[in-house]
Length: 301
Image (cartoon, rainbow, N blue to C red):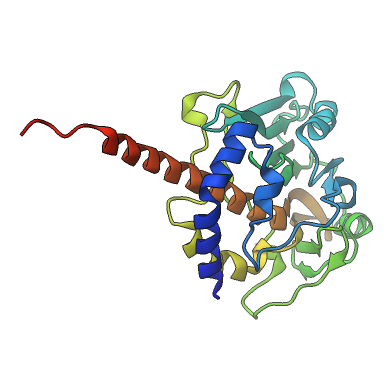
């Protein structure tokens, strides 16, 4: 049986069960739903994701809960330097969807320190799924390229990709460094920062306009699965660092650093679980509309 047929069968057989379990139990049926993930998608670690084993920047780890990440971010960006964004589901449940920190200007707009933390969506457990960070060094405080590269290797290990100004690392979901291989036109440096099906929400309390209605879009999930499975970037955990260089008396120094971290295996699982849920809701709504139509009396002719 093909992956597409498997997916179609799973969706047909579990559609009503998924709706009943998730709506009635307030998403408590996630573990049951997760067991229906089609073959070929990256399986979750047997003991779950341990955020402490996954890469971080500035103390915020991929896989952290919203409370854990907020505690770190509030220390990094106190007061109004931190903004909290929310999203909502069609069932009325809400969650923190993004944290955005921007340090106060201390150098006349000549430096920058920003960080954005993105979370997975309900009904999956809400976890840090992607992090982006930008540092622009104040004039006269640029570190040398050699010192910066040495510091990055000390933190993340030996890189899988090292080009001029670009470094990338790949890990499995246990936090172990790996070096995945692919076609000549593919590089792990393409994968960091992937936010598959991500809905960022808005600052403040959720409004109807913020409600997430689908994860992957209107195309049926079964049609998307082969591409999701085939895409090498949908597997593993990625870190990418871009170094913007300048020179001081002939010595390369780092003017700015852009960082992207993402848990792509979690991202694709999260997107598929959400799409299964939204597809099931839409199907249940259509069935109810059909049932209501069937119960209406025919007009007098």
